[in-house]
Image 1 (cartoon, rainbow, N blue to C red):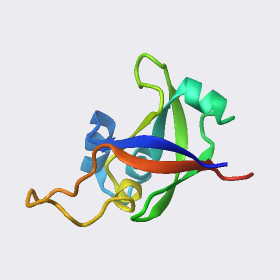
Image 2 (image 1 turned 30 degrees about the vertical axis):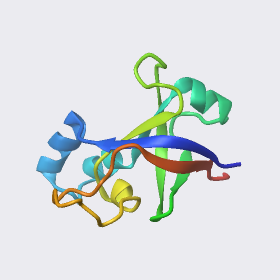
Image 3 (image 1 turned 90 degrees about the vertical axis):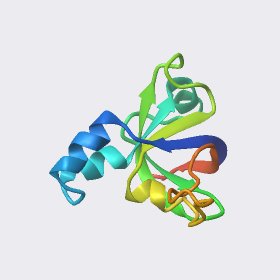
Image 4 (image 1 turned 60 degrees about the horizontal axis):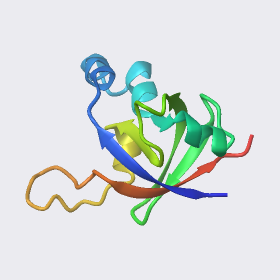
Length: 115
């Protein structure tokens, strides 16, 4: 069953350092394909670290792996993903003149991919 969450794509230090090695390298792909979630939300959705989830919005969809974070580090109902190909699949092309797609506070549906 899908549930809505707020997705916040952004830069991370791991994403930045792995980018230096190249966008086609395993480390960059792994970092940009990892969704950080509030651990309580993961427990409620019966997710464990490494589970694959599908994120869907009105722009597109992507599949990533999830990683739990302490509730005090990531508020309930929100998730973070480093910028990369998976997050780009959920962003519209409108940049509001900034050159950067509007990407903060995106509402997405999340659903576990069955094993």
